[in-house]
Amino acid sequence: MTRGEQIGSTSSAHDGGSVVLGLDVGGSSVKHLLAPARSSTDAPPAPRARGRHATPKDSPVDGLAAIVSSLRGDTELERVVLSIPGLVDEAEGVVVRSTNIPSLDGRPLGAQLADELGIPVDVINDGHAAAVAEASWGAGSGIDDVFVLALGTGIAGAHVVDGRVVPGAHGSAGELGHITIEPSGRVCSCGRRGCLETIIGAPALRRAWAEAGGTGGPEVLLAASADGDATAAAIVERASAALAEAILTLCALVDPGCIVIGGGLAQAPHRLVRLAERYVGERASFHRVPPIVPATLGEWAGANGAVLTALRRQRALARS
Ligand SMILES: [Zn+2]
Image 1 (cartoon, rainbow, N blue to C red):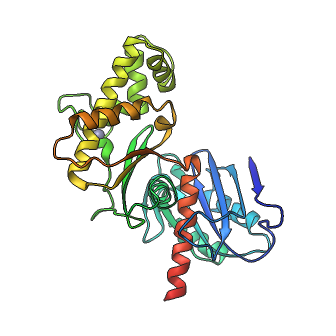
Image 2: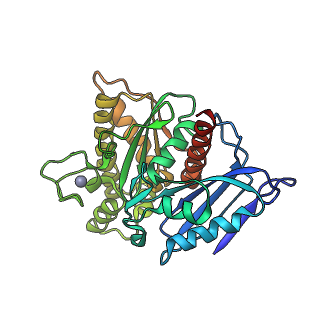
């Protein structure tokens, strides 16, 4: 699978001129976004081209280098930033661990691709990429202090201040999915009990729905709840209440100016999020509850975050 879309009638990826490339490397597909290297970072640039390719899982360095080469054409490609699912040492460009693409584990991907391509290549975490993009160019745009929460299979968060993720001393801040909601609850994938993810992650919702006799995934559960199914509604209410507790903890600790909620579950009917928002309002005490808004960049958030990072690093280079 390799599909590309040239944007605009007069400019294409192959017109020449300086560009930067953002690649959002997912478990099954790689999305690319090519943008002029002198774009402002204040708003999303008009992309030169975008598209997607099958993820090269067996020989990822050669495969990713081939994707970059195919997009390069006769343009002057100044920098590539890859957004990668998993634990990434962003300073060294090393993929420490990637559950979706195990062949990347331990690879100094940035250095290997830079050698191959002869240009700077950076590697960033996909959650951070999406969060930076949503905070700067998406739903959090214009607000200095944004917490971006991704509801999907897992639940990840990133605190973005002045357009940059606050990673914590060890790079592991924002793990909202592992806040304890029920100390005696189910065992979580992390080994502890009753984490938020045991109640509201996609697998947890699927399991709760199956145990109640339902069939299908979280989308079916949410649709049944919206249609008035009392069993489904009870599961959704419990999940929303758990999310509300986590958000109140977040407000107490971080006091963000805005909470952006994205990810696969948030793109399903918004009932889960809207209900959580209501519970937050009802249960808040001293908390300053900020606007809770849906993400706006959808599946292109990671690629946008990669492009934004590339533009910022080129500007920093030009200043130094
Ligand atoms: Zn956990």
